[in-house]
Image 1 (spheres, rainbow, N blue to C red):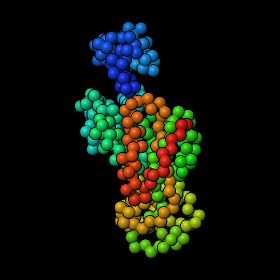
Image 2: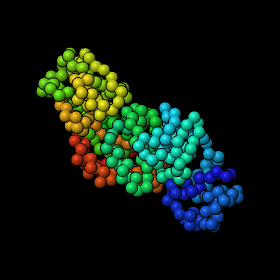
Image 3: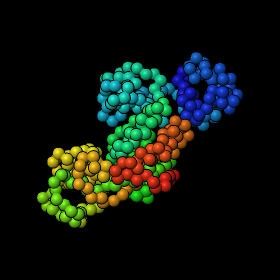
Image 4: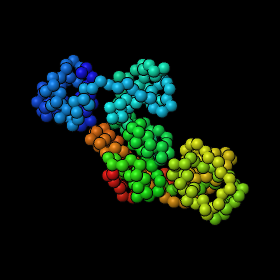
Length: 333
């Protein structure tokens, strides 16, 4: 019983030690001693704490499982995050690390990391929120992923939030409902323009003029919103040459800018950034999906507040091809 998560559950519910003492009838000093490991709770106290915190005794006091590493992460500096009751180690990237992982051994530098939440998706504007949250004492890790991969990572418990854009809000909701089932929330953050970007110097006046067998198309992998757009216009443009590019919307634009292809599907933002021609095909709703149970976590609620804040939405309105004026939609699955 030396392992306990009393403090973690208490903070998630926004309770002080005094609040928890009032709810349980356990002296505040005893709660402090239990949280620090200086005292072991009696069976009666353990039951009271579990009831007040809305969990089981096992969830509060069972031994910690060994941390697991994210996907292909084999070693090096890491950032840790809690997924349910499991600790996951992620590559630290450019963030100050919590420690170093090598050959199964963990050397910790930070034993009390900030509350940390992980997002998977392909929108770069989400990084604006990570800076804002860090000022509030919350870490927000952004992992690049296609819509399909983001949903898989959410379903398998690797991330807290998945970002998807597979059409309208209703189309996104249908995909999420079929893939994840109940117990999740879907929120529409904004819409953006996705369309055909063209390399510099290519004289094309409209989408109808794209019926050219000499054009080499650069495509993102299946399961991405960009690939879905390509499939929707494929019959009209009848392409004969294409190559799959593993990467992001930015990678497509970068490749076109450097002459590795003639046309590709990306967002207006990156077409403008790389000086490419652009024909808008559609506006898609960009949505985030997360487990409903996380709404009880006060720190996670601050993450959602930041993502749906007026400040963030005003920033989006200044980005080429972004539209955040639409009324925020949230659906419960």
